[in-house]
Length: 284
Image (cartoon, rainbow, N blue to C red; front, side, top):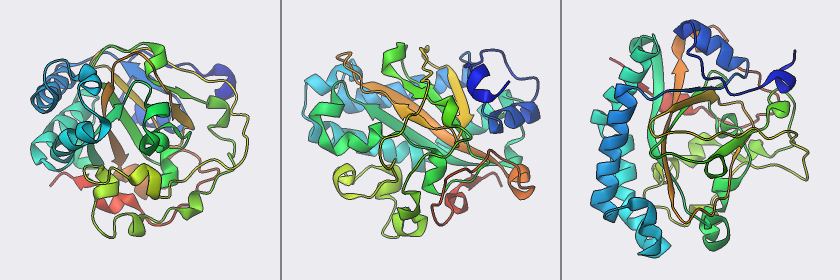
């Protein structure tokens, strides 16, 4: 069967690290149970959020305006991406999956923040909700996205995949994205700890015209679960109105051997320029 007809988010652990990578390049998505490493990482980040925002960080959006929230979260975002002590948990997650960290490179942790009603109340956040492929942002076909929620989330608080478009072109303007230009003046756009106006001023790749994306497949999840999927998947963050901010973590992984061998998911419509892989972290 084709991917679009058979697609479902899988919950069984893959047989091996190699099988998991091959299956991911073919479009399969895995949502696996929390592990000791993922739960410890979640608790560490939650402690940073409480320090920055006070008790019950998910409700902080009701205690301060968006500019204040952004300012308080900026040091957290920077620490997650730049503090090398957050690199070891990512290597541990790879080992738990049966892989060798020396064989991979990763784009470090990012904190994702989706406010309740942010789609209508925060114009600068509009790019968060664009349907897209990660590969439109100069990431390689071997990119595997690794996503971890900080809280239990209902299906309408997460995001959706459009499996019918995994291997079918989506009209887009990804050619506007040049990685070298993106990071030329620093990593504010790449990491997002200073440019609060980026959603209004930066040029993000997007869909051109009206597109029938087909069936949308979403998911609910528990704190510390691990969702992994190909960067070639066409997917979209959902606007949510739960009254609570959604916090999650993600990082991007590339197996260097697969990249050298020309493996990876199909590239059916990506035309971005440059390569983000040059700035991925490698294990010495």
